[in-house]
Length: 481
Image (cartoon, rainbow, N blue to C red; front, side):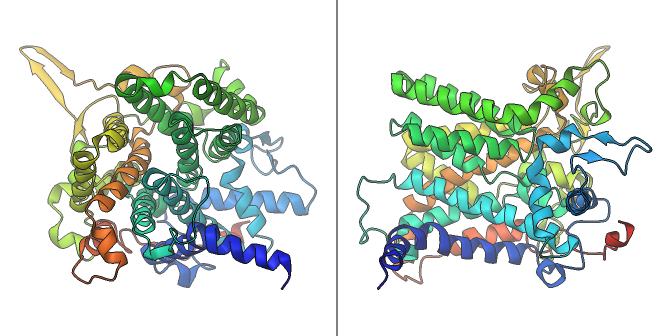
């Protein structure tokens, strides 16, 4: 047999089958289920309700495709701002929100291209979160053994699958998925960034890991220019703070500090050419309107959202309290944050059984939840007022200390911290699943082990395949172009 074929089969057996192919198939199936019936209308309907941003992202993909076919500059909007048009710095800084759609349009129509990329973002997020969870549960050995790696019969693989699953279907993710938000879903590189940081801090970093981390930072940056605020800041602030307080020795190694500096330094250098025009607009005396929009309180998370199951599913509306509809009915896209009973139970088990390894993930999750509440506390979507005699004021929260800082002030959606909450919980939950020994019994085929099944159902029930009406209305936008 051809040596290349033998080498590929060896790689497939040792790494590819359980690291890529099987989890990718699993997460693809999950994505199709939670977005049903999108797959049946993928070329005729855009995902999201009529008021969503789907049209905007689909139009960006269409324009770049049209510009390439007609010899025009895809970064210059010559059809807008008549008669001169304008250069779009935001479009230049975030090419991954529309260039994949553009490339897909060479094969599919505009509607299908948009929907496929939206689904791929969610699927890839699950896959990369699975890699992170495997790292947390089972750090790689110098010489991996084929006997140890048994695909879905391996309890570690099964627990990691649940971790990737929780991240890809986390309510904050599905809120943006339901609204057709492409850039808030561009988090598929975030688990890889965290994986590289984890290896470096654990003392297993190498120059290659630092390089992979820097490239992952670049990919993250090219998908959403607010990523430093809603993903990197809480990981560094809360994760780094935890290490300084409880694992200080891990940051004293010279090699660790060098690799961290190389990863962030190289990542910043790579993204700088894409961000210079955006930064120039941000510091100009007349910044564009999209950098001056408000909504810091409107698009923050209500504390009740963490215990507000979805009222939009056939099963959820029977059990969801009235406050769920009050909260999610006004701010479902940015404020959805239900944690789930089973998810919380598994996170508590992880902390109780392995505080030393699960503590950092829960600290990051709790910190992100706190920041997601925004600068002012609100209750059922109304700012809380504190009165003392004739004096009254709103209750200021910790995020208010950061919201007015340079560049951070350009962001307006604190609820997006809960995407990082989902990733941190995924890492903790997969460890909790592993520590229940349920993964071991399920891998051996024990029918009495029900926690993985309940775990899955709790996530689908709280979000479900019909949380919002995906692809609810025909979109004849192609005719407009």
